[in-house]
Image 1 (tube, rainbow, N blue to C red):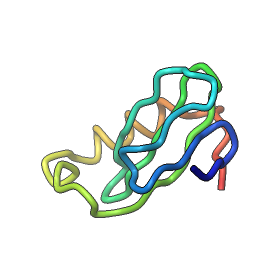
Image 2: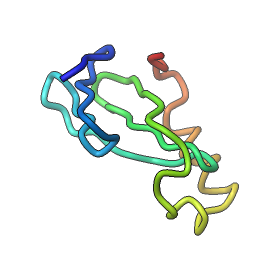
Image 3: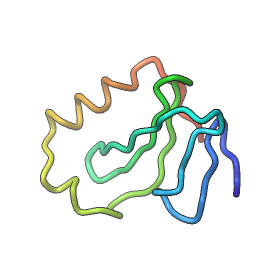
Length: 76
């Protein structure tokens, strides 16, 4: 398993876990998919257009998702 910051990266975006055992959450901003750890206060990009659920969301949801990680470290 590959590590990126506090995240362990598996074979697909669904395998992303916090290395410290904290709960993670998957969210979308437009067609981009992200995983965040709210306890570590950081997040990563895991891909785009991998799941169709983003199509049922709107700009208000994406803005809310973006706001939810303001002040978090984005790990590249």
